[in-house]
Image 1 (cartoon, rainbow, N blue to C red):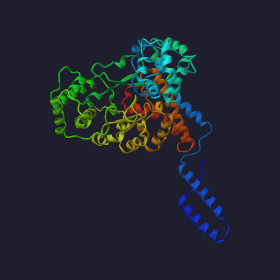
Image 2 (spheres, rainbow, N blue to C red):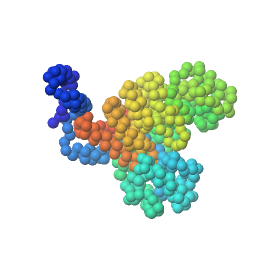
Image 3 (cartoon, rainbow, N blue to C red):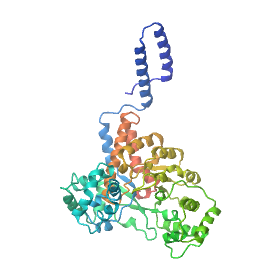
Image 4 (cartoon, rainbow, N blue to C red):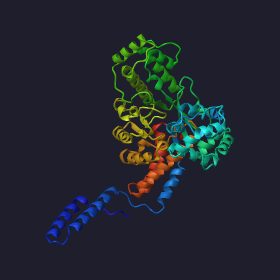
Length: 485
């Protein structure tokens, strides 16, 4: 059975002719004419938006069950190693990673108190709770807060976090933190088959592939090679022991770094420079970049304003992209909301990257976090550029409503092989679990609604769910070898 459909343009002419005839015959009142016209237009609009057959009864439950059963690929994490986690304090405060702490600060909690007290290794449990209690009451309704409650209930059997439960929750967390709990939370509870870990310590990186059975792979973060504002500061961030004397020496240094990293089998490169500068990158002539380098070298201790440093930063960014192109490394770029307080959101508008997309058509640019709040801009970029992909990591943890709204828009505008819907973007496995639950809920809810409206068939919805939660990430991030039997 299909919804009512007709040819609106043709029938409008027929309707118009009939209406004129009836008016002449004085058979319709003005009110009746208006009512009929409104009804006709409403049916026409409904017919135009209805594409697929009406779904069979029970489709909502079938889609929800199918989404819950998918083995996820986690595209973006900051997880510490299990050994590091086991050496850290294990109490209710582990559910408050940097995101939840950011909301505590946003609610009015003093920033120093939020970190030094709540995350302090020597802080007593009662003192932690007193420090967090007021802020928790204010931020528990945010999606960050929802993730705390999801993890507390599903992983530790505690329905709420309050004066009466924080001690018992902390005890259960402590009891759970034994060797093998990463596998239990990630593989068994979250149903995650692989995680991409963002590695900042590229000089002495973790050997994540051998940390356990959770199938970790590394993305190296290359911000340090872009976001510098002075000569001495640049050299100290590189940590090579001797100062880089020229732009040519810098280029040779970066080339050697990439060659070394590729030998370490990195999965890709990540840039989070929107925390420090705009994503509006220009293609800069080498001579102009070299002039900036020499100016910095002549005043080694000076930190230059962004506008003066920008040409050199832009040039080095494009240099790094050329290496990603050479070694066929996919790229993740932070777009949209920055965690923490007092950031400049306009820095993270993804439209500033257009010249890079044009310059490197062979590079896979994966734009992170659904661009919150730049969802429309992100859809436009992914639709227009074959080499631009949407990675919705962290999005459901920021706002489920935004994620559902823009996931539907992405499906309507962007080929579905270019969308990825889950990345926990957390420092703890408990955080990754909460984000996974929220991601599954937003995906299922969006697809159910699109089937209910007959935009998608049930089978199309099931196909899209598997692609955006698993298959696309395997293809885009070159993970196929992990799943070849």
